[in-house]
Length: 65
Image (cartoon, rainbow, N blue to C red; front, top):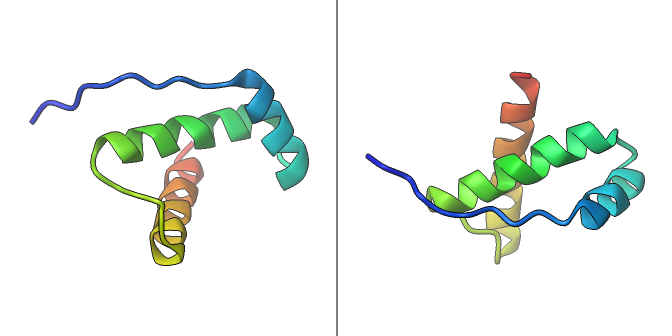
């Protein structure tokens, strides 16, 4: 199975999110990258339930670092 796509990341948004979430810029950058890859493999985040699932997945992959 091949996954292909582009991730466009705003470093300004990463910095803003890091301040809001009280995490390092590096951690937030990783979260945004994982978030993008999750979208590429089919996860969505439109509904509250989907957002919860997406956040749990992001947290899981961050825990592996």
